[in-house]
Length: 126
Image (cartoon, rainbow, N blue to C red; front, side, top):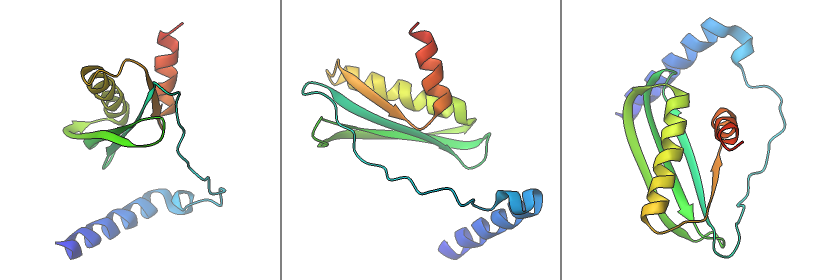
């Protein structure tokens, strides 16, 4: 199975390189260090992310909740079938917030790597 998976990934990379040429290859952008960002004493931190094989395509999302010290409380994930990246990123945030609320966490800081979702949420608060 692993051989088939690697062969499939290699085939997809070849197709992508043929379609986009050298423009698809990684650039020389600087590497960014990512670190834990904590909240206040009574705030939980929700990290979410969505993923799709292609956009649109088979999609899923997940997230985790930690306290201000970084201690893990719970995580979640779900496969949602055929979808697009915006939808799956929004689902990750929505489900994460719902689960935090159900767990009794009323003060939550949310982190997402989707700038589009962050902007949409920010627009709704004005």
